[in-house]
Image (cartoon, rainbow, N blue to C red):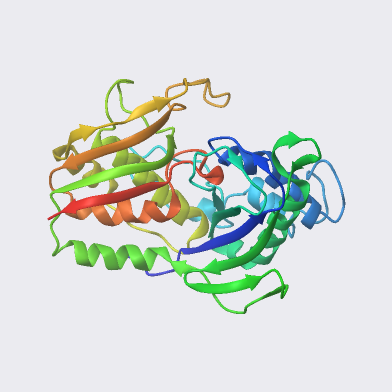
Length: 330
């Protein structure tokens, strides 16, 4: 297997509300509604409504994030492994992790903290992201109040345990803040070969979108979960990594059939809706809750851990698909 990097930066933003705020239970919509507008305010030099034909389209951050082209060598890359890997769309280079609280009423000076995950070269633009979130704070978020939408200020940004930016200093600390997810996957696979696992519980921290079993009433079967996980890993590496990542995807999915669901509190949030691009509604439902699996899980855990970092499924840009593994049993 190649050892070329697939970079991933994980950042934590610490902010404070400047006004009382009424926010939705699912905070991802806050960023969906305002992030793009704030980004244009920060990076757009031409002030055009349409990026098509703009002379700066190859240098501007906006099309990089929202109109992500295939990598330059995409036509030279090998096809996806034959089998059940269906994820062929270009994944977004960013994931915003909204506040996990489901509370809706907040007071002035309450904390407003959130996360940001960046893939590949988008890590080079972390300062632009900071400026964009500052602009979001000025524009305001949530329900329109008597004096407009609620404002917030970004006080600091962290990468791991280190503060890399503070609002009062207005300067970004120099350094490489991204980690190599591919190297981490290789290391975890080495450990997994000598660390058997017989049971895990998977918690869907935020709704899992576009990952469904053959039966709408069925708990999330493990082969279906692994199909989505491997698709996520391969498409991220294909788009933002360097070199080919070789996985035995068909073999992994076949062996995943030996893992069974032992307990599930999964439920669907909202109804499936038609997908304009595929004319299908089968994969647009949102799943929340927890599911417990039992079986020979050791070789699968590194791939699940990978997607703990990257999120899984659709609508990941706005925080969907955050997963967390706990209750790991040897």
